[in-house]
Image (cartoon, rainbow, N blue to C red; front, top):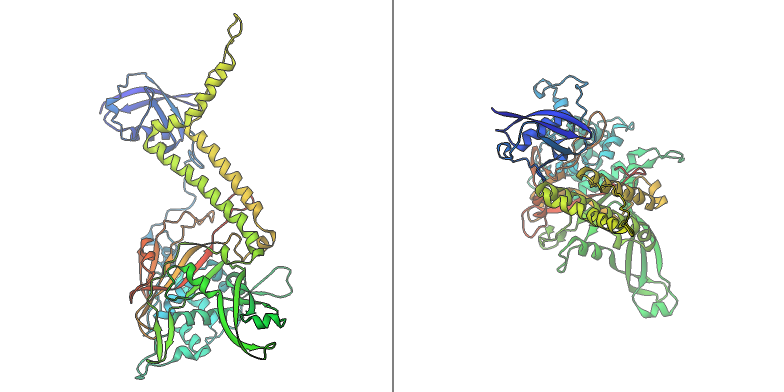
Length: 548
C-alpha cells in the first residue's frame, strides 16, 4: 500500500492525512469524517477545481506530497459526537420473547383460526393498528369478567404485544359470542360455527367499546366515549320532498344531525372509484308520508360531513341479500381507492372553511420538502452541476456588485471577494424556510378543531389498514387484513422514525411483509381478495414549534 501525505484545510484548521492511493474517494472521506466529524455525504472535497466523488480512484487524481486540499461542510444533527453506549448491548438470542417482539423489524403476532373465525382475526388486527385504542385499553378498569369483551380485548392485545407467534383469541371470541349471539351461529349441517361478515364484527366490537371504553375529558363533568372521540363522524342532513305540490303547500326542508362510526361506499354500475361510492352514499331516496299532502311521497335526503374523526372507517357495500338463493351475495365490481384521501368536498360549508387553508398549506410545505430532497439527490448524482446551479445566483449578484463599484474617477476602489454558500449552508437555509412554513401551518389550524384531539384538522387522511374478502358471498370465502408498518420507535427519545412504505399481511396466524403495490391489487373485480373495510388516519400536522 503506497500513501501520500497531504494537508486538508477545513474551517480554519489543517489536518495531516495519509492518503491510500489504492483506495477510493469514499475511503478518503471516511478518514476526514474521523478527523472533522463531518459525515461523508455532507462533505465537499475540492481537487483541482472539481468535487471528489465516492468512486474516484485516488491513484489517478495526481496527488503530491504536502498538497493543500480544501474541504467544506458541517456535521449534521448529532454528527461528530461519538459516545459510548449508555446501556449494555444485548443480542437478540439473549432477549426474552417480549423484548424480541419490540425490536425493529420484528414480525407482529398472528391469530389462530378456530374454524371460520378469519372474519374476527382480520378485524382485530386492523383495530390493533390504532395506538390510542391500545393505550385506552391498558387503562380500562371496568368489568373484570371472562364475559366482558372489552377486558378480554385488552388482555388479548397485551398478549399479542409480547410474542411473535400465533395466538388463540379464544377468551375474546367466547365473550363476543355471549354478548352478540349471532357470532355463535352454527353451520347448516351443525358441524362447527358459520362464517360471519367482518363488517358486522367490526360494527359490534365498536358498539361494545363505545359503551364501555371511556376516557377523561379534563374539566368535563363526565368521561367521553373513546370511540365517539376518535372514530365518530357527524353528518348534517337535509330532507326535502321531491314533489312541487309539497313546496307550494308550505312544507319546509328538515335539517338533522346524525352520529355514525363509518362512511359507506355504495357500489352501482357507475362506481369506479371510492369517491363515486361516497357521493352515492351521501344522497338517499326515501318514501314517507307527507303531512302536507296527506299521502306517501318521495323525499331526497342529502348529507354532508360536519365532524371528521381522527380515524375514519370506510365500508364498501359489497354484500346484499339475494332472495333467490337466500344469502348475502357479493358485488364483484372493481372500485379503486387512494392511499391518501381528501374528504373536504364532502363536508359542510362551515367545516370546509376551516379545513381548506390547512390542507392547501400542507400541500405547499410538501412541495418545498420535495424540492429540497430532489435538489439533494441531484447534487449527489451530479455535484458539479449542483454547485453551478447553486452558485449562479451568487455569481450574478457578484457581477452586479462589481458594476456598482466601478470607479468614476482615477481612484480604484478595493472590493472584498464574494463567497459562495456550501451545500450544507444552502440546504440549512432551505430547511429553515420549510420550518417557518410549518410554524405558519400550525397557526392556520382552526381553534375549535385544535381543541378536539380526536378530530381531523386538515381533511386529509392516509390509509393505515384494509380488511379484504375472497369469495362470492359473505357467508363463505376468506378474510385477511393488511396493516401499514410503522416507523421504529426510539426507546430513549420516544421519537418514531420514518416508515419504509411496506405493509404487514395478516392471514390468520401467518404474517408476512408485502410491498405497497400489493394494496392497489385489492380493488376487486373478481372473487380474489377485494377491500371490504378501509381504515384511514388523519395525516399528522406540525406542532407550534414546527416539529411533527
